[in-house]
Image (cartoon, rainbow, N blue to C red; front, side, top):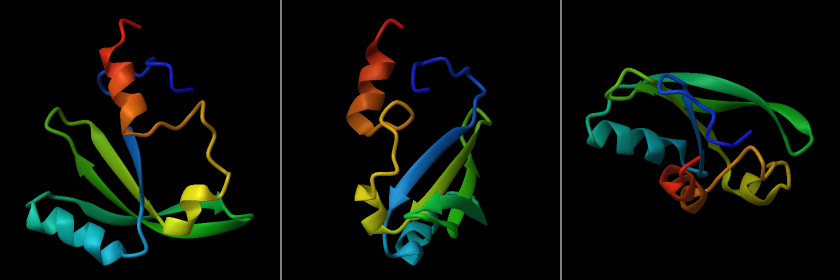
Amino acid sequence: MLDGSAGEQSDINLTVYSDDVKAVMMYLLRNKVEFASGEWRTQLMGRLQTLPSFTLESETGVPVHIAVLPDNARHSGSRKPETHADIAAVKKLLLSDG
């Protein structure tokens, strides 16, 4: 649940919607971000799919997992608002006292 209960060492999971996985990888390379390529398996649009992912380490050593979903998955209806947040919701959560 997206309630601010994660601790300082909790993994960070990000979802990027893009039909161009190479563009995401090139962004990381251009910005000299060290990462490991991998795969992420998830139920998407009614079927189990294997999608590309990247894992990197934050400055504090926390793993950051980036799953790259196709752009049309953005509106698939499979996202649960109580467990997902856009950038505005994350900023609001970070600024709250809770």
